[in-house]
Length: 168
Image 1 (tube, helix red, strand yellow):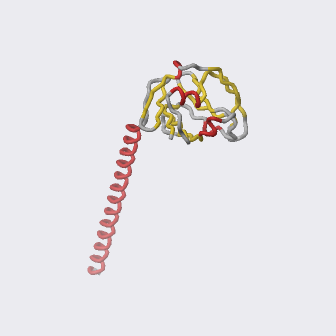
Image 2 (image 1 turned 135 degrees about the horizontal axis):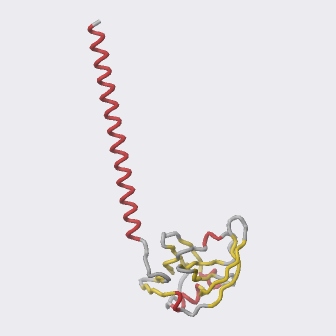
């Protein structure tokens, strides 16, 4: 009887020790995940483009120009956009065509243009779309700039809070 009791104590002590080690591994893993998340968030926040309110960076080759949309020759932009459900929304705002913005910024030769929001969401446009008849515009909405692509079957490329335009 005494011998069996010693074996049970050893087993219980061994099980407790193994459970304790498992808990420590889980804690260390959880701490590593939290630390990694903090590092990724910090890097993302540091690398985001920040411009003055109403400003927009235009990047082509190694040249970066910052423009203020309200200081450009804006015109009334009117049309309809379509969301993913097929519902239409009327747009009527002051803005500028992407083609004119790029030309005014000295960007002449490009194949694609990416428009980035302040959270790095982006929409890609081809030169053919920009020069086409459908209409690609940047409009002023209260305190932000918005990309509008008329004729798209979904408004996913209508970028709100646009801060950067990259032509390549």
